[in-house]
Length: 190
Image (cartoon, rainbow, N blue to C red; front, side):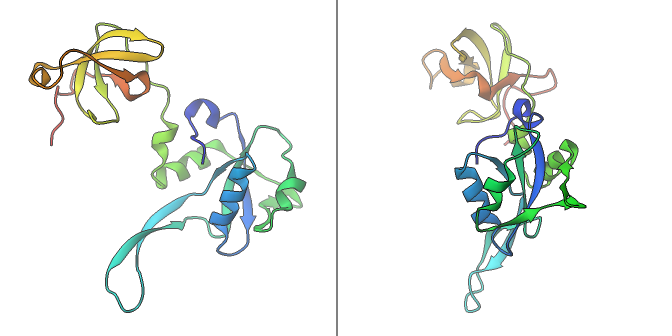
C-alpha cells in the first residue's frame, strides 16, 4: 500500500468497498495495483498454525468483515472499473447512492489498526543549531545537534558519549528528525 500521510489523507474522498467473503486482502491487492489508495484496517490476532501444534502465531485479521476503505481523488469515483474486479461486490450506500466516509472515522480506524504513524502531521522543521531527536532509524530515541541542512538532509552531531564511535556529524534525512522538547532526555530510557 502506498504511504498515506497527513497532507494527502484529507484530499481523498473515502468510500467503503464491499468484497466477497474472506477476499479483503485480494481486493486490496488488486485495487492497489490499479492505482487506488486502499486501506484495509487489520488487527493482529494469535492463531494456532494447525490443530496438532500448540504454537500460536500472530496473523492479521480484517476489522471490517468483507469491507475495505478506498480513497479517490475525484468526487465521482470510476465505479464501473472498480466493480469489474472479481472480489469487489459493491459499495456501502443508502438508497442506491454511495456514502462518503468521514475523515474522522477513517483516522480512528487507522489509530485502532496501529497505522497512525503514517498519518502523523508534518513536524515543525528542525533548524541549524537546534537539538533534534531521532524518530526512526538506528539512532531512534537519541538526540543530537543539527550542524547543517542540505537538500532535505541534515548533518547531525550526536552527544559526547558517542564521540569515540562516530568521527564527526552523520547525514540523515530530515523526515526522521523532530525538535526535542525540553522535558525529553538526551538518551532514551532503555
